[in-house]
Picture (cartoon, rainbow, N blue to C red):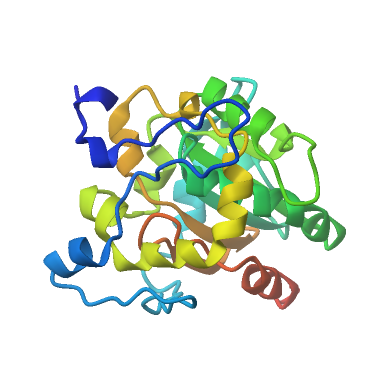
Length: 258
């Protein structure tokens, strides 16, 4: 089995020194020369335009919620729970944010944004669910240490779940692999969120990385359900390619009432 030490140096995330406000090295390198060597032409400016990401439910069968509902994951406290028990399967609206792994600095930044938005979703009666790759103890590390722009409270553990075997990711057919993780041009958009990334990095630790190092190659996605009906599906094209939360909230608010 591969270990973190066996990865090439440029692929290893670094640990920021104590009390350092510098941003740690991310587990990918987006220098223009590297991208050009892969046959992709990308110019990095102050404002970065990333490839358009398609949002479509057509890839998934009408039974996707039932298939996902059979998957067992874990609460941050370590209790097993079925996906079907996470929200009202009749008419409840749920946002399911599939993070990458708990040791991904981009996921710490996204978890920060989710924490900031939770009150907004709660006030609209929308259940927010965040799932990451790793064991429950790794989920707790993220929950206890992630920092948001306006709050130093922990990430709410009652909506954070762990999927160490990536079972839900496989059911949702989310992207996986070296190219998607380190070389996809969609990841360039992280540079437009530099301030948020620096904020997330202040309390970051590599200790939240999964013990099974293959988990770092998993990409995430965003899904919205009303009961068992899939309303919105977006697969992250690369590391840091997260769904805009304003768009997700709009989908939830426009969901038809039966």
